[in-house]
Length: 475
Image 1 (cartoon, rainbow, N blue to C red):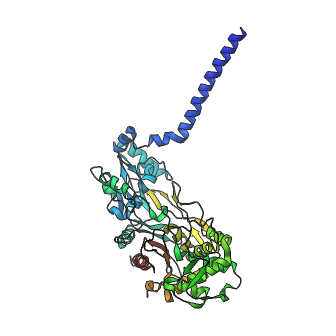
Image 2: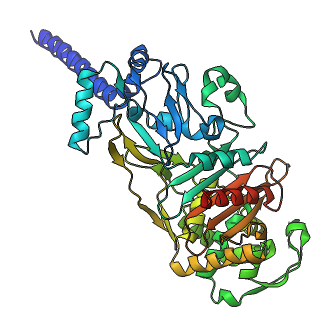
Image 3: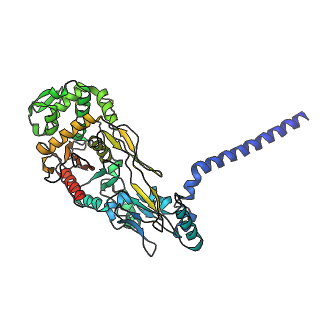
């Protein structure tokens, strides 16, 4: 009898454990897996459902169509490669990327956004009387013509660029060259995937790493202003190079700047002076200052619906000998960045030390043109105090008026800027960097451009930046 009771207990325990296992799996499935399977492009039910939905249009800030569905039900991308990295692609064969992917539920009308009762009633009426379902359309902060112009300005060069509204954080342009043509994704997918040099599927503006080179001197200069007593009266004697045991740090073309202070060292981008200042500050202070500029941070392009990761700039390395610290202070060694993080750094100077949260979704509208959602600007961080920001701004204006960025000087629009040349480890031509904001005294936009292997002196990156700024203000 006792043995029988024990066996019954075991059977009961077994079935209870089985039941609990099923409950646990169902909870896990619904929380972490169901949504993914429900909208997985390989799910036949998804394919059939999406065939009966007229996908919403993607507009730029001025109403230009970036992506739309034609009368035959085909997805079209008028700007082809130039906006390919922004729009992404939509394919029943290969899935969806970019804005098409991140805002897929909105474009298919799955996201329930009813801030207005009239919007709700219109959608309800449409759902009852229409056979075909329409998704919602989205308006981006992007200026399609500006983006197209910057992309084509790269010519055959590879690289990336970002243009931000300093006051709001709106992304006006986010270029990655080369990019894929979303119209040809089904035909050329394999070729795009196998291009390991151009990397057309990689958004280099936010998802690639480059040494920032001399544009990082903005961070070093800010650290010096905030941490070295009487920095305005500091002078260095630059003889064109700096010896470190068996290594030498040189200025561009070995130029000797002689006796020079911080402001003029910034103007002519003197490596010798900034290396010595970096050693005075030390690794910990430089790292702390870099982190104020959002290095080593989790960053996103963000709104109510999405968080698109930005590969954050990095200032964090194990080799901390004098040479490593010296070259890190001029943006070399293990210092890493991309155009988005450098554009945010530039915004901090332009906006009195304040960085706004970058975002790309301006608004959502339904099939009747009713506004369903509007993104509001918000502050991301206070990076600098106003006095330091103003001093760096003064340095950047001087760099345009008298220094290495003089080629961008314009009689109608006052521009503040910093040049950058970044050595790369592949033994090829150095990368060409340029960051700027305009107008200098009342900034509206900030721009960061990198041209891969563009050569020393920032020439190509400067030309692209200048064209971007002039196009924006002459629109």
